[in-house]
Length: 113
Length: 114
Image 1 (cartoon, chains in turn green, orange):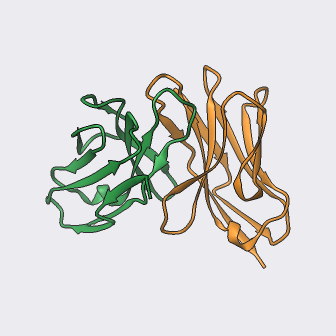
Image 2 (cartoon, rainbow over the protein chains, first blue to last red; image 1 turned 180 degrees about the vertical axis):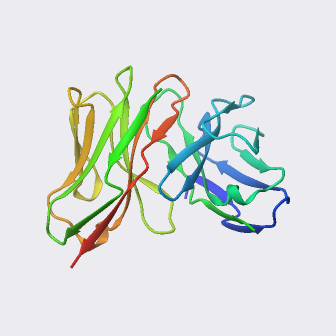
Image 3 (tube, one colour; image 1 turned 60 degrees about the vertical axis):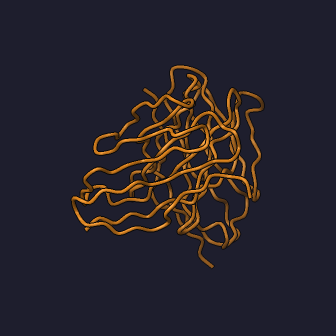
C-alpha cells in the first residue's frame, strides 16, 4: 500500500550510541515531518522539511539532526543518544498546496538505556 | 503561537453512551483543525478535519465535530460508544503558513466500559 514507511519499528540503544531513523513516502508529497510522542505530551514536532533540500527546526530539535535525501526520504539522526530521547517517533508527509491531512507512518519505538 | 488544549486526559464512558471529547484552540488566523485516533501500538489515523467549509464535520466510525469560532472549540462527539472506540484521541491545528505544521493537543484516552 502507498503511504509512509518507517524503519526500524523497534530499537534499543545504549546511551551515547548513534543511529538514524529512516522514513520514505511514495505519494510525491513535498512536505515531511518528524514528531516524537511521549506519554501525556501528545506529539511534538522535531524537524520538518517543506520541500526537497530544505529543513527547519520544530519545537524540540535539540539532540537531533535531519537529512532530506530526496523528495521521498527524510531521515532523523541521533548523534549521541540520551535516555531522554526514549520515545515513539513518527514520520509524516503532506501533499503540496492542499487542505489534506498529514499522512503518518506506523512509528519507531526507541528505547535508550 | 498556536496551541491546542484537550480537556481531560482520560475519559470513561459506558458502551452505548454519548462520547464527548473536548478541544479548544488558539490561533490568530482561521485554522484547519483535525481529530486523529491512535489505537494501541499503532500510528495515527485521521478521524475528521475542518477546513473552513461546513462547521459540522462528519468523520469515520460515526464521529463528528462542530467548529465554534466564538468558543474557539472543536469538540468531538459520537452518539453511542462502542467497545472498539477505546483509543487515544488527538486534536490538532494547522498554521496554514505554507509549512502546514501541526500543533497537537496532549491527547485524551477514551475507555469504554461494558
